[in-house]
Amino acid sequence: MKISIIIPAYNEEKTVALVLEKIHDLTLPEYEKEVIVVDDGSKDNTKLEIKKSKYIKSIGFYSHENNQGKAAAIKTGIKHATGDYIVIQDADTEYDPEDIKKLTAHIKGKEDVVYGTRLDHFPDFKGDLGKGLFIAHYIGNRFLSLITSMLYGQWLTDMETCYKLFPRKAVEDMQLHAHGFAFEPEITAKLLKAGYKITEVSISTKPRDYEEGKKLQAWKDGPIALWTLLKYRFVS
Image (cartoon, rainbow, N blue to C red; front, side, top):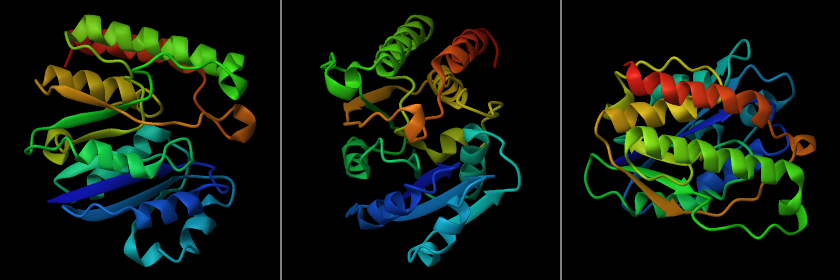
């Protein structure tokens, strides 16, 4: 069985090389590993960092001429993926690639969907986690996850997580319309409406702030995510 790891990248020149190294070092003994990187029209040296990586020959690399949003990069990755399963990996270091093993450990057949949750426990709001940014994102994410649970009838704690593992056949013919961060609620809504049950497993995270390159903006992306959840509850 093959796992396709899709890495969307936009202006991540400081971290993308390290992520590629960690993904290369990730061992999944029971699975063949395919790595697909999509540069989404970066304006910094992200594309150069990818191209000069010593792992470039072992990955599939695609790029957008202009920035189209995270969802567009993921859709390009899905288009070129050949794995039985797909998992999304951000090009920053908020997520630890070793946690992908926790997701694949829950694959029992070819119909499994597994999300890595950062929010299945109450966080310790100390140090950097006590910053207003993290608290706002935590509250917003918990709210959106609660709305998802209420609308679609399955309890989720972290709908907005990057770590989503799903069968390629579940999405290869799926019409995904999002361009930016609305990908997260759209694919979740459509997987649940298609009858897939989502298993959540606990993962670690190291949140970063805007100065470090964080792109998700709660005040802007939150309402879009809410509208996306409501819209796809009642339309296909």
